[in-house]
Length: 158
Image 1 (cartoon, one colour):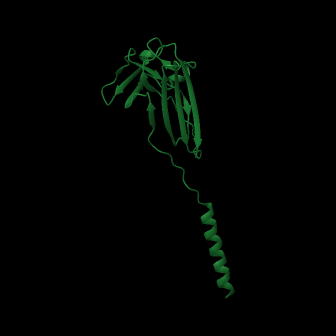
Image 2 (cartoon, rainbow, N blue to C red):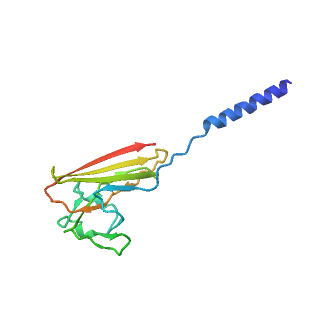
Image 3 (cartoon, rainbow, N blue to C red):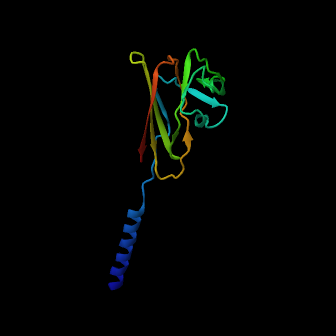
């Protein structure tokens, strides 16, 4: 009888340890979202990696930008070509998320206030130690160079 009670106690303790030590695996939505004035289905082909690190905070790429001819794009699965800056502007904003992260990007162009706001929400799992950089290139309709551009980046940790 004593052996049965001892065995049951050990079994109960073992089950309790397993049940409390298991952690739910973090997951985020795999698909990024691009909203607002962002031109959908655009693929970017920069001439080198992490160009934003050399831009000195000048993340509005128009025809006058020193990296204007360093990025090609493909629209809707078409062939890649240089950007027609009379129709489009590229915005970018480097962020660092975990190896398991999704990006919700939105650009709001307010012609009455002459402002452009680029919002990025990074949803990430904190269990991963890596912090890869993402340049967050987006293509938007051209706007006057006099518009004030601001960036609103936030992080949601899961």
